[in-house]
Image (cartoon, rainbow, N blue to C red; front, top):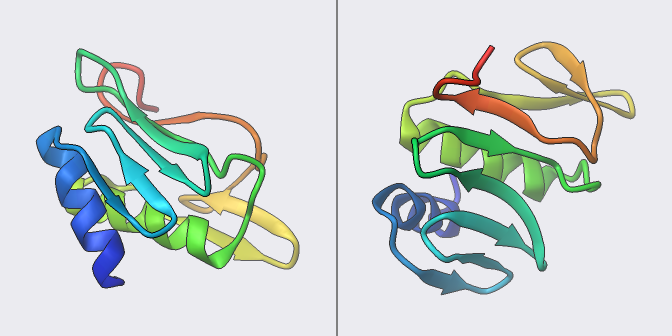
Length: 103
C-alpha cells in the first residue's frame, strides 16, 4: 500500500480531515482528483465507487481504504473490466462494502 493511501485511509477511518497531493478526505468521504470514491454514512455504512475511472490509482486507493477498515472488498481489473470481489462492476456506480446495506 502506498504511503499516501495509508495516511488518507487512516484519516478517513478516524473521521479526520487530510489532503495529500491529489487525494482528500473530510473524514466522511474520500476524493481522488476531485471525484468522490468512498463515503461513510452516519450509521457506519461504507460505499465505494471507481467514479468513472477504472485506473490503477483509483483501485489502489479503494483497496487500501478497505484494508485499513478491515473490509473484505477488493477492486481488480481483467481486460477492460472492473471487478469487486470477483464480480463485474460498472465504473460509475456506487457499491456498498460494509454495514447494514452490504451484500
